[in-house]
Image (tube, rainbow, N blue to C red; front, side, top):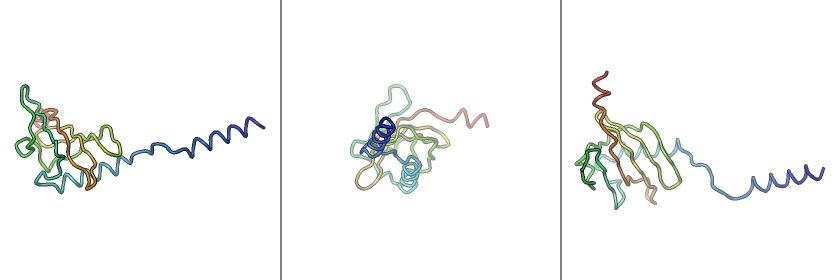
Length: 126
């Protein structure tokens, strides 16, 4: 009887202890997808935004409009997600990207983009 009471006490104490709450990944994906669709002029960037090209020797850029990144890209998958940041895998008709987004007081902003490669082989196979 004592062991049962002790077990119930320990379980209830652990269940009510403050800790990390799970991140709502579908909601985060939806918010970032809405941000991508609404940001046609690439204004939702962090102050230290960087674009990393897949071309060997290419220097990082801080101007997304000079890259293959477009507002018409779609989310293909989600990587590591926390309350304040999310890794999002996107694609266009011509390229694939790994994007790091940061939550700021005024919403989600694009922080880093890594070009993963082109989709030209996939388009030719269709």
